[in-house]
Image (cartoon, rainbow, N blue to C red; front, side, top):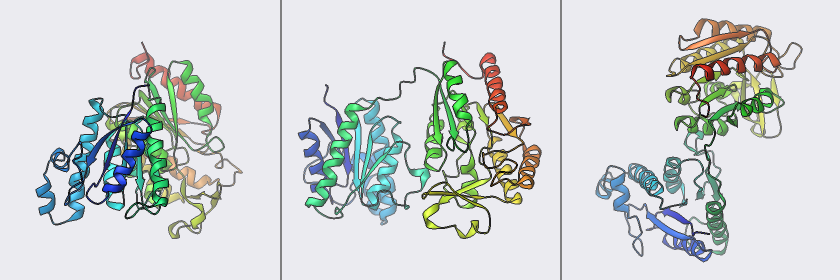
Length: 411
């Protein structure tokens, strides 16, 4: 097996011992190292393969400018932009097979920029004192980054932090050896959903699309899943998207588990054909064990499990969601098919269901009819989103797009 090369990045002026320990473990396991120094003020004990001066210049600035700013936040943003640019250059040149970045809050801030620059499938690990922290907004977390908590590692080596660092070194090298990167042999369809009990269309649509020669990736739209979906859409990874669970738009508007303000925009900007339906538009998801947020109290709540609960939007709030969805779709640079199942958009929203609100559903549908942009073709369906009629109509439109060349099938 050809030796894999891991990019090791961090502030070598303040974390020299820790970074060199990572390097030693990776080399001891048969890996190669390419080091990147993202320090500003100090110097490493020995030169890095990519110096801090090269990093700053790649960020369109210089170390002197970073120091002269007199502000550590400004300086690290310069280094973050440069580290991201240099990492991508190294990857494109075939010089690295994976990356590991070490840091506290400053290093983690930079690490998110660096890792976000690399495509899905490149192993990327962040060893951080704030791993898994709510300090990191979903829109900044790369789609396939791995994070390891740097226990006991704020300053200096010890047996506790060596345990974390050695595992991280083995993880990134093992990932570089084992990764099966996306091959893109078949055109890829990106689909969003919210689990088989709430939204069921994927059970029918995935095999039907695969039979047509497409690969299907289904994203769990609970914040991070939507972030991964949007990240790939921005890269132009999809032949088409079936964005049937855009409730992260509602989450962003009403303080739920957000995928960021860019949700439901990147496919349109990348000129990717979109088939869209408002699955779970009426729900705002929140962390169940933290209790109901103040802005969501006094309304029906459904607890999915101990981690995740959802609150039901009121009629006026649903109108706001409808307008926001239509505003986002109006930016599309490729065809949009908008499906509106008028009998409900999640399994709990059926007549007699625990979260059914006929008035709220009607308010949403009315607003969608009024606000549907010219960029979208609205198809109203006299069915529920989980009915077979929904999938039948989606496939009918999709097949017409293949026939007309809107969606490019293999060959």
